Amino acid sequence: MAALLEIAGRIDRPAILIEAETPADIAAREALLDRVMGPARRTKSSESLRRGYLPAEGLAFVARGGDGSIVGTVRLWDVSAGIDATGRPVPALLLGPLAVDQEAKGSGIGSALMRHAIAEALRLGHGAILLVGDAPYYARFGFSTDRTGSLTMPGPFERGRFLALELFEGALAGAVGMLTPAGRRSADGRALAA
Image (cartoon, rainbow, N blue to C red; front, side, top):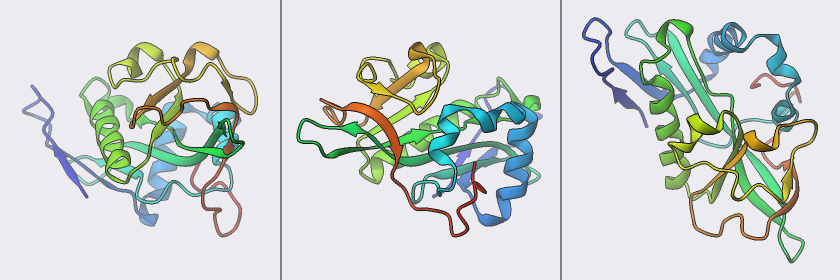
């Protein structure tokens, strides 16, 4: 499912198309992430949950400029958000990374990617999305620390940046413990999809 985004107030800029990422997008996506986030992105705690896994089915998106180039990306990953009171893993999604080309910053592409990813996760029946990021930015989409107090990440993280959005009320109720990967492993076990 693709979405067309008109960049408000930018007549000189063509519409942006948000669509499912394809294998042909990998090199361009990785180059975008390297430009925007640098090599330190590979050392973050969230990365350890993605390494060797594929994004959640149907939840990897790119934003294309009028020339077809990738100007933004967002992906969601299957994780277990600790366990519930019965000891069962609590299914959730981990969002990230979200990145927009420096030349397109402030144009609404990041927000459009977020809204699209959240809507698709909801449409596919997922209950919650977690992320580590800037709380004031992600609050506009409904993310907060309200449901992450009993959860931890594998490795260092800033508690105030560990955020959650319940797509269905109570999806994270009673969840305690560490996030662990729960998705499909990549065929070669490498982090092609980091």
